[in-house]
Structures are given as C-alpha cells and as structure tokens.
Length: 433
Image (cartoon, one colour):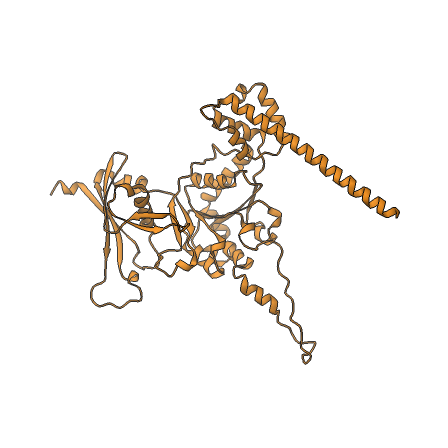
C-alpha cells in the first residue's frame, strides 16, 4: 500500500455544484487531451469540421491516456456517470455527469497545477443554430500557440513601450478600477491598412498578459440577445476580439432614417405616425449598433472582470463615432506602414543582421521607406531566407521592390494630374460655348 500512496489523483468535473456553466478547468483538460494526446488514444469520435468537408477527430469517451510531459508521467481517465432509475429528462445530457481523473506521482503536485495544463486558449463562437443541438457551450476552442511577442513586433519602439506600459497598468489595476468605480475592462482600437500587423499585435498582447483570446465572429450572431449570452460565457483574464468590424455588420455611421408611413385620407395631421419602414429594417437587422454598444460598456459588461475588448478595422473613418469614442475604445493604436525602426527589427529577426552590417544598403532602404508605403508584412516577405537566397540577396530584392513601388507611385501621381488637367480643360471649353 505504501507504493500506491506515492501517487495522487485529481478529479475535474464538467460542472460545478450549481451546474450552471462548464468548468474552465474541465474545458482546458478536454482541449489538451484532444490536441496533445490524441495520437496515443485508441478510440476516437469524428465530426465534420467547419468547412463541412474534412472530418475532425477527438478522443472518445471512456479512454485511458498515458501522457509524458517534461519527464513526468500522467495517467488520464475519462468517466461518465448516468442517472439511476427511471428519471425523465428532456435531455439526458442535463443529467449525466462527465469528469476527468488524472493520476501522477506526488512529487509533481505543484507542477501539475502551475505548469502542466495549457494556460492560454483561442476561442471562436459556435453558430447559434447549434446551441440547442447538444452543444455544451457557445464557444469552441483550441490551444493558443501563436508565437508573436513584443520583442518580434515590428512597430516604433516608443509606441511599443507605451502599449506595454498601458497593458501592465491594466493588469495590475484591479484596486484602481474598484476605487474609481469602473468595470475592470479596457478597449483598444487597432486601425490601419492590411498587412500592418493588427492580428500580430493581438497575439503579442495575449502572450504578454497570458490571457485567453475570444475571436468573436459577428456574422454568426443573430441578435443582441445572442451577443449578450456569448459575453456572459467569456471568462476573466481574456481578450475579446472583433476583427474587421467595419465588414462584419452594418455598424458604420450610415444609420437608417426612420421614414413615417403615408397617412390615409381619414387620419388627422396631428396623429403620431409609426415608422413602419424603420420597424421592418429593425426586424431584418437584428444585431444592432445599440446591442454592440451595450456589449462594450452596458450593464452586462461589468460582469466578471479583467477583460480587454479589441476592434480592428482597415478604415477607422467608416465606423460610427459612438462605437469608438473614448470610454469604449479607450486607446486608439494606428498600425501604419513600415518605418525605418521597424525595418531594423525585421532585418534583425529575419536575417540576423544589424544596422552596422547593412552599410550602404541601409541608407537607400531608409530613404525608400520614407518615400514608399510598404506594409511590414510585405517587407518581411522579401526578407525571408531560402536555400538559394542569403541576406545580401534578400536585401537587394527588397531594394528592387521598393524602387518599383516608388516608380509606380510616381506614374500614378502623374496620371492623376493629367486627368485633372484634362477635366479642367473640358470645363473651360464648355464654358466658352
């Protein structure tokens, strides 16, 4: 018996005592076993993926899995308990109990709780038509494995430090937010052309803070009620992301005018008319700007805490000002084209070279970057090494690409000038007739 006493068992239930929502710990274990330990399991269950073409597999119920991690061995068991007797229920899933049990040597007790399970996850919302068909949660998730950090993020160093300081102040600001009477949340608006690193910035934030990421797809949300349910299902220490919000739903500044219906001949002029067309529009567009605003800073947004909400857009001016005002999107971060400082970092990351090693090419590249708008993603693509391209070849290729972009910009500018002159000439001729 002394031999067995050297081992510890931990049981993780799917639901807590209240059976109101699934345990975050259980969800993390489920994702880890499916992602990291799936190859050693003998039985799987399959379902079609989101594209409805390729099957996705996960570990089947009732499996025993042996996992080795950092020279430590763990035995995982998946159990399901069903109700006894003739218990009537609309859904058997509401009565059965699932849980995981892990057995390991007692020397690894602290290691299991602190380091073994994954810390960060990437969530995406399930389509609402699946919420009532056996789905246990509104969100699906995978382990968050993006490698971006602020050390590799190609932006201006001064702006980078400002963002890092702001994130630290938020993470350590629980007492401050309580003192001033504000919900412990913060909004960031990332705007700029495609390829300027908005998604990479989000990944760097998540890795820096060690937060989960909820990627909210608004086109899969039918109405404001569903949006509120999704928010309630999120956890603290998380980043909620809506990418390309200007393309997701009609949240631009072009709000519909409420047109009164036509009066019949027997109606009094002083009668209040109901905006019938506006009502029809509201019925067709069930997810409204008002619902999104309440999602950001309404009463429900104060539930829980330590959440960051991030919007990204390529066109900041297209958004309704009410959506991005200070207090909702507290900090606006412009992700612009590649600058000289960003290029230095990219050259160091991709080619392992410094400014002193660039010699005369650095001066030309610096001048070209001041004349040409090229996003960091395009610059990085030209700096990608291959077996047939060394650092010098990569830099020469970047110089050629920048020169071509500059020449193209000059030609477009000259053509636009010619078009304006032709248009003005036609107007003068028309005026003399």
